[in-house]
Image 1: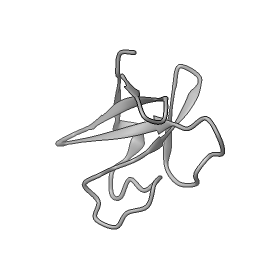
Image 2: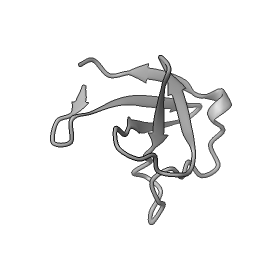
Image 3: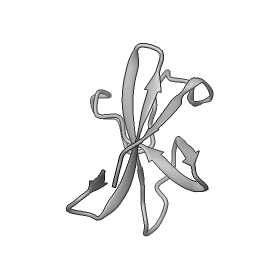
Length: 72
């Protein structure tokens, strides 16, 4: 699945007892937490973290994450 409006690829990030998303930005790289999938950098975008900036994954440990690619 692509973020249609922006034309960006995304993956889901499954943590134990939590699900988040990450986006592969094509221009500029926001700072913060990210995961690498298939050689591309995906910046964490967790909508459940109130007032959290792009790239903030809170208390979740990306080393325990399972990445789920969204179909294009």
